[in-house]
Image (tube, helix red, strand yellow):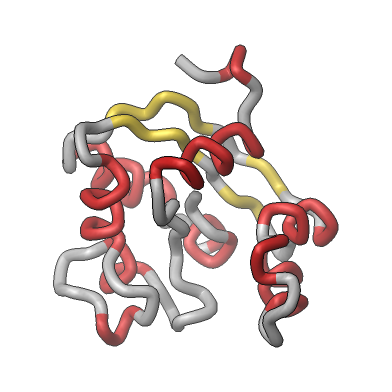
Length: 131
């Protein structure tokens, strides 16, 4: 999911291009805007953490671009492509090194497991929207 900071700054196209050039197939993609309540549902796993409210407010602050991607070894390869959560620690040429502003505004979210990728994809897309 391309986060509000990167969408607002006009980086969606460049990020999508990097994703496709890395061999990912886009199964589903759309631009949408989460409410704070809907962001809270998505990040419910973090509900007890001190940053939860700030995260929900940030994720509902502007448009996002969720995607479902396919590729052999997709989760691991995508996490390599996006780079470390803290852009200061991200490898050169990664999405976060190129487009993130901070740990909080880090341009993109990537699922951490195949199971969570399925859950997160179904959160944003109906089965009829997945190609």
